[in-house]
Length: 293
Image 1 (cartoon, rainbow, N blue to C red):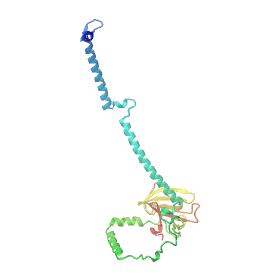
Image 2 (cartoon, rainbow, N blue to C red; image 1 turned 45 degrees about the vertical axis):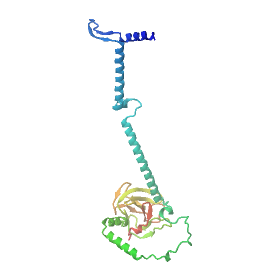
Image 3 (cartoon, rainbow, N blue to C red; image 1 turned 60 degrees about the vertical axis):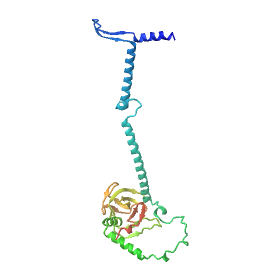
Image 4 (tube, one colour; image 1 turned 90 degrees about the vertical axis):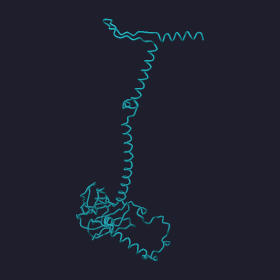
């Protein structure tokens, strides 16, 4: 205990010992500035300056754009760019998937690879044999009084529904692409999802409705083929054309010439137009919507 007191006094004496810091002119030795200091003052001032410098550096890094110049620190702009690219990549993936499904459907239309299940026909695994199926001839299909009253009510509503009338016209009235006799009817059982209209080579072939050309190329089996996408999920297909006057991406109007009738492709027996109509991915009978006479 007696030894610690002299040590403390000696340490305090060293810390509080006065020194003079003098700044002189080197040539004239004239005194410019002088400071009276001790070790304790120098330690306090140095420590305070270091703390201030550390605090200032921390503030600059945390709250100013200077932090972006630090190696390994990602910038705000880079983070925003990464987020945008991630969003775009996700959107492109969805669009690519939709395009793949669309191209698959178009390929099925061109090659005729449509299973009976996809078009609502009879399936090979039908659970009922022909003998066990009910005879529809014995069923009374005549409308009852309530049915007739409901039909009357709906007819009155449609009479004053202008929008419904416009939609019906678009859905069921199409422009005939050519006029002529039908040589081959629409037949689901034989997977002939079209009608063949005979005519003279060079006869103009017209679009059945407004739309955009999504395919206009030559194929080995069906010659010059044109596919047009219309509103309400409708697609029209024109095969065995002699020539095409429209290209992919062209906009067409109902009744506008898209090519000429011909006899092209290996699967043809003479000049005719092979016309297909597809609604939301399912084939429909063109004669239900078009008058070819």
